[in-house]
Image (cartoon, rainbow, N blue to C red; front, side, top):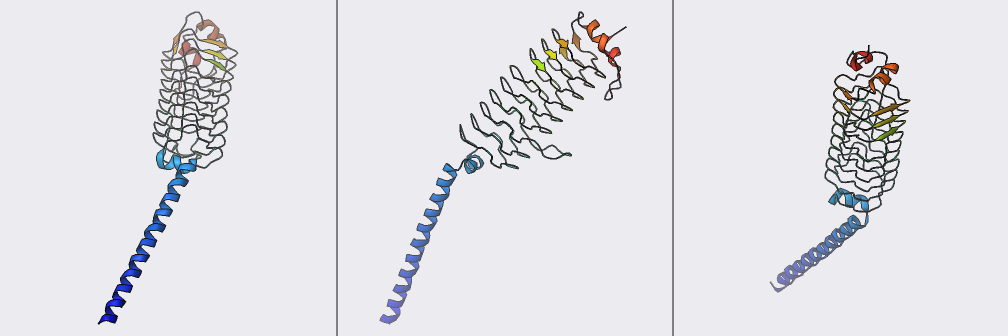
Length: 268
């Protein structure tokens, strides 16, 4: 009887010892994982969606859910955010030259930056083609040679942004704000600029071929060495003094609306 009791006591002690050891190991592993998440910016972004001023250079965050993430003043050079969801994300002050932010697919839009904040960010030469950027804020952002091809930018704000040589081919800029911008060598072929705010905008050596500017506000806008072949200005607000200049270079028919450029300008 005593031998059995001792055996049972020994077994209980062994079980307790193993349980304590297992709990200790588990605690160590959890602490290590927590420390890793805190020191590794990629894990930190994925787990907390907060990474102010951190370095995310050449990292792969494709297909990540980063909605409402705060990446203020982060360095994003060469990183891949293709197919990621950054709805409502704050990237103000971020540095992101040549970063990949597009959908990486010719037949679908999945990179979602709806209402994202890019204020003061430098994403020059970044690829944002086919992305959803409705109501995105690009105030005072550097967007030199940035690719917005076929992206959706309805209601986006570009006030004070540097846009020289940016590419917007096929993009939807309905209701976008580009007022008082100097658009030097900006590619705007086949874009939708319906009801866009373009007051005081200087188009300089830009390409508006086949663009649709129905109802756009172009008061005070100027057009120097700019192509408007096939463009549709129906209902656009244009200074009367500028119309004769545009009529001199207007020709063709818009392939989207089937409206003649000269007709849309009221040329005689």
